[in-house]
Each structure stands twice: as C-alpha cells, then as structure tokens.
Image 1 (cartoon, helix red, strand yellow):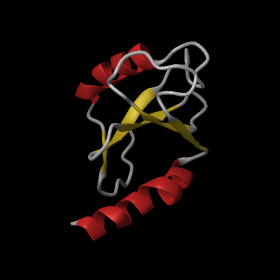
Image 2 (cartoon, helix red, strand yellow):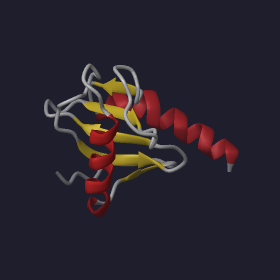
Image 3 (tube, helix red, strand yellow):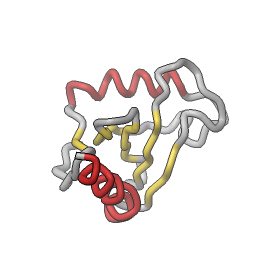
Amino acid sequence: MTVNYPWLEPWAGLPESQHASVQHELRHELAPGHPVYGIPLTPIGKHEGTDDVLFHLPDQRLVLVHLTWAGRGDGVYPRTDFFESWADFATNRMEPDHVGYEEAV
C-alpha cells in the first residue's frame, strides 16, 4: 500500500525497502495476548528520533508500535497506541511531536 501522507518532522514515510525488516522485528517482539498479535500490519511511517513505527491495520485504523529491539515482549510490550484515522494520528500524535521537534531545533 503506497499512500502519500503529509508527514511532519520528525515523522517520515517508511521506505518499502525497510518494510520487511520492520515486520520481522514486530513479529519477533509480539507475544500471544498482545493487542496486535497475529494481525497483519503494514508499516507506513517512523518517528526519526525514536523506535516508534506507524502501521495500517486491516480495517484501515492505524496503530503506533514502540519497537524495543530487545526480544519478545508480552501482552503489554511493545507499547501500542491506536488511532481511528490519519486525522486522529496527525492531530493527537504527529502534530504535537512536530511542535516539540521545532522547539528543539
């Protein structure tokens, strides 16, 4: 799925060349009982300063997953935040991150 979203720094689209490695890490970290365990997710973006990756769910909602790169998680980790739509994500996460990023630069 290729969608041109209007990203704001420090968020950026995730190149398709990185999708496989991110999906592999996600599968490695998710354990039974985790809210997105066993659900096919499509990575679409990444926060440039953290290990937060934004994924499409099959129902077109979005989920932000904070990858730990530390092995198998549990029913809580890796941490996830769900968004009903792109507008929900942009308003409640990306725009506040952008304001904080602009102030730090």
